[in-house]
Each structure stands twice: as structure tokens, then as C-alpha cells.
Length: 209
Image (cartoon, rainbow, N blue to C red; front, top):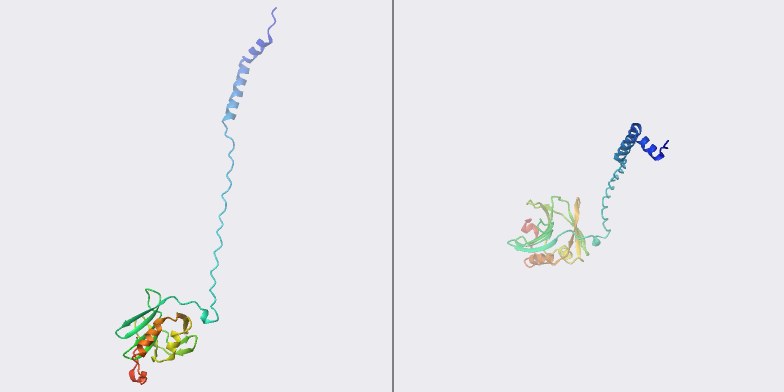
């Protein structure tokens, strides 16, 4: 009697239908396991964008106690001659003048005019004198208020020779800080050359610019 080889016995047992079915099932499970994708890692939530706090409003620059330290008002002086005499205008370029000084040779008077309709007196501060002058509306467009001065009024010289600047203040209006340039003296001299001490505003009358 021939003894069966253990190797052949194992092959036959593997070749049995039941064993083959088990192997097929294991192969199917392995293939399914290989097809399952790995779990996805959850993306971290986007960072929260926090708006920066609004910048604080700039504090107004405190004005110095001494007017001689105040910054100049925007503008420059311009001198012109016309049929009435001469005029110096102060203000920003391409805009109506903030302040004018006119020599009216026919009236033999100098008119200091400020833009606006406020008819309260103007306070003129120079390095040598401070004085308030009354004003009247000129009735023109754009509106101005004007003070009439005699050509020999010492206030004109004080404005022209004030140290660096002079100030025009008026209630309800921002101050005008104006440089003391040569245009002021040019207008003053234009009127003084045609002025006679016997002339007076009451005799000549007032004609505002």
C-alpha cells in the first residue's frame, strides 16, 4: 500500500470547492479593503479677520498764546494797478482774495477789505500797534466789508513794517495771519503821493471798492 505524500494531500485539500470559496472570499475582502480611500483630514477653519479699530481723529493743533507765533494764513500778496489807482490782494492762488488793500486816488483814501458779510469791527494787530477799525459792507459780489483809512494813517505803516506778519481778527471769523510784504507799502505810497492833508473823508465822500 502506497503512502500518500503530505504535500499532495495539502494540494488536494486546497483544491476542494469549500477551500476555493474561502480563498475567493478572502481575496474579495482584500481587494475591497485596498479600494477604500483613507479618511480625509478636515481642513482647519479659516482665520478670523478682525478689522483694526478706527484711527482716532487728529487733535486740533493748539494755537500759540502769542500771535507772532501763529502760522500764516494760506495765500500770497499780489499788486495791481487799475483805473482807480492800485490794489494789493492777499489770498490763495486762483481764488477770491481774503484781504485787500486798495488805494482809490480819486477818493484819496485807502480801503482795507476782508471777505465776508460780518460787519463787526476788524482788530489789526502789528508788532507796534493794535487797533480796532469799523467796517461797512461794500455791496459787491463776492461780498466784502471794508474800513476806510486816510493815506497818512499810521496804521498802514504799522502793517507794512510789522515784524514778519500782522493779524486781522474779527468776531465770528477765523483770524487772518498775513505776511508784511512790500505790496502793502506800495499801495500806501500810491495814495500818499496824491494826498493833501486838507483832504478829509467827509469832504471827499466814501467810495468803497
